[in-house]
Image (cartoon, rainbow, N blue to C red; front, side, top):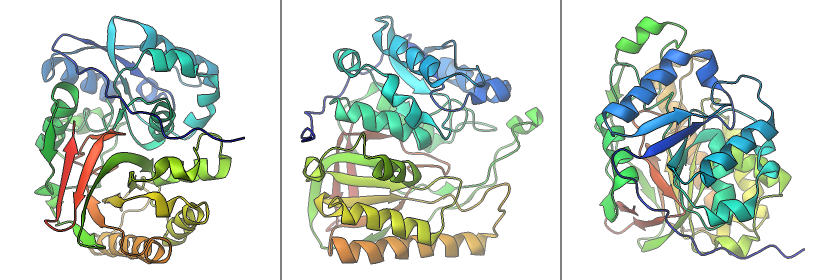
Length: 352
């Protein structure tokens, strides 16, 4: 069967203050386990962005079936009173939801969808339908951040929600990959421990390229390399900018190597005009690496990516270390929107 070419990607309408936003849990129903964290995220959507967020039936329903979660996604997209859909959090089985969605109905009702991590599944799915989504945003992580939202995240989400036009990205002055204990409600008042920001790392030919983004969380992209069901033909990604980051599972260099080699052998890596790689999360509550160990983990991951790119796409412009994934703060990036990677000026520009 010949798979379709890349669709014409369309940016859904921007939001206005007072708009209703459906909060869905297409993966893990984290709000049902840690409601205080989710409620804090909802509160900030109301107070900072003047939206009217609300839960769908499965947002807090732990153990909801894939069919139930898919039905709520469909309902959120088709309800004319809802202007955007945002994931509460990620998880590890959203790929099982996709087969229960109706692509024709979603294509006819495009809306901004916000999420990352396991939500790479839905972002990839609606990308195939020609709908630009937003990689980033969740009520339980960056909106529900202890203490306050990071100002970089707050402004980036505001831009994605309300604004159009071009924005030049910049490294954050600080960051963290540590997180508190959600079971300890008192911890929601305490700001996380931050580290000084780091400059981005550049490589590849000194050229400037522009194209639509595609990618997401590497572990989820790897799922799709195995399943093959929701990937288009390699040529459909020609000229796109590959945007990848890794999760709190902290995949080993061997995993990163094998996933990228899989993309290379499929003929995917050679299609992309540039690569944007996120700062990896290098600390977790069950793997509390020291700052020095985290720096070494990050460097080894970047070196691994470099080695594979040099085999399958030598010279492709690349930039490492953007805050586009599981670290804090988080830049919200249009998934399928235009991004310019300028190796000459060492600048990244995003069109919202």
